[in-house]
Image (cartoon, rainbow, N blue to C red; front, top):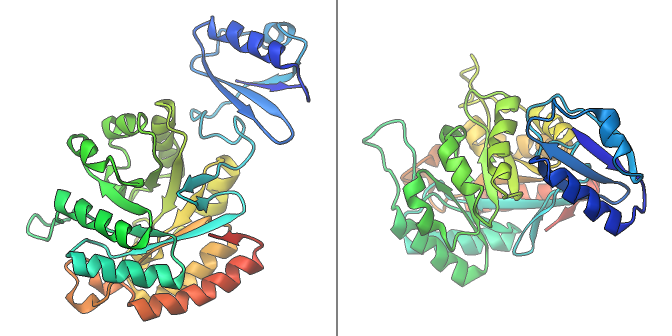
Length: 338
């Protein structure tokens, strides 16, 4: 249920209304918008009569029931776009940011070299996997806590905020200095992990699962936001289909769909979506055209010798070429690159 308030409502009356609603043991999400303020009621509101709620205060414009199970992520609860600001790199609204770096952290030299390169080309955040979920138990699994240390060294050298994936509740303390915590496709429905991340005061990049619907993705974000963390970023990274030409199938329709349903920013990972470096640029163009708020691209200084996903990684020069295109396309769409 949502309560839409009249324009320029008295602040004291708003406070009284919020206190009255809280006394009924109902979760409250209050959103102050540019043109309208909305109170979202979270939980079982079936016992509430719309007419009774309307009559409870003269500052109420209208009351509507929301049928969707997701509330906090719902644009009906929060009409304005959420902008997630990571040390000045903004995602959402009219902002567009680029995240770049290797699939996995391999060495200090590698991370600092790539970090300097992608920053020079225009990336605003540095990605790198310290913990790597792999299909085979014999594949490289990442450097773990040492990998996070090396990411922080690269941040110290370049000033780029870092993005890296968490895989377990037991690792949370290791991520204290990480700027953006990534939840990978395989952990999208690790609900205990999502609930714990809801207690964190830092952005969460939530990747869509390999075979998950948009409703399932939205509900995973709801788990995080229900815990109090409203800094969630969706990432469309391709889903499993019958097609085998590409590693996955990039669902471009998910971007405008998610942005119409939710106020949260949406980015695209064209590297994992296709597994083909030459497809990164055209799909980046497409992502910008359909309204993405950012992209995440894998870059390696020597893809042939990469310990993980080298076949889909761009070289620094290839990434620089893509960024020249990104700058033009973002400007054309009327967004701000930063």
